Length: 135
Image (tube, rainbow, N blue to C red; front, side, top):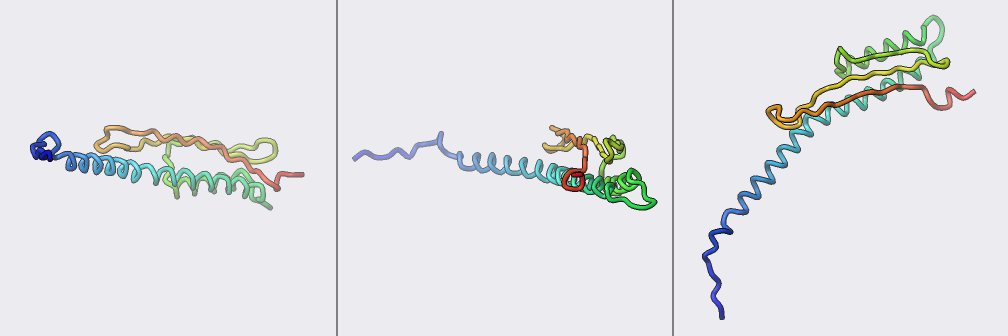
């Protein structure tokens, strides 16, 4: 019977290195997620608020002007969702309805210490759709 050699110095310590590499990857992915997810969630929520605002503009009645109602709703939502002050906001009537367009960029630290910054681009045009527009 052959005796197994216990002299395997080149194989020692590999589990510790693998553990350190896996933990490093988990920390980097977690850091990126912690920074990216809130910004993406705010953007998605703001899109929904923009859609709601333009639909409310269709239903504006009486002395309320639709464009002013949409502008007020979008300004409030931009404050609530921490939209940058330098964002491009355009609210205008198009074919009898109010459309709202908002565009901005935000830099997100994906890697620690500012090694890599992702540029989150938000550019969305809200248009009323659905049965309210059918004639």
